[in-house]
Amino acid sequence: MASRWQLTRPEAMTLLGLTATSTYANWKNGKTGTIPRDTLERISYLLNIDDSLRACLPTDTAIIQRLRQPHPTHQSTSYIERMLQGNVIDIYLVQQELLQHGEQARKQAG
Image (cartoon, rainbow, N blue to C red; front, top):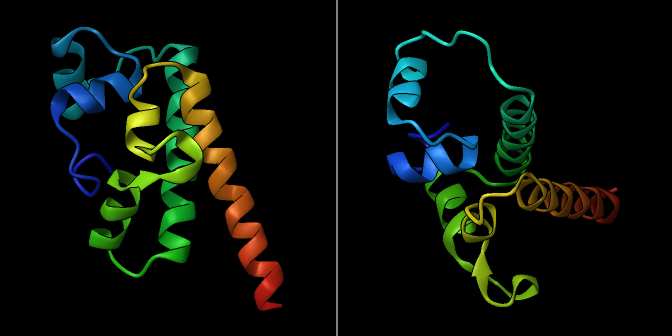
């Protein structure tokens, strides 16, 4: 997902709540060890965000554009900027907004 979203290493680490680059490198190489609950929560929200975006956008390029374009309800910051504030709640709020948007789109289509 980090490569599909074209995240830099610092961006990916922030989204996962990591501070040690060695931990991130180990995880990328399949050496996870014990994953903290906070990080599991982040991963869950991020996977839901990815699923929501993939359900409504046709390409990875469109997903990247949606993540990085300024969003009017976020005081002109993008979804990714909001999530990169570093708190779990910021990722959660983006996930909730995308879920609501998806539900509204399904209701309009149905």
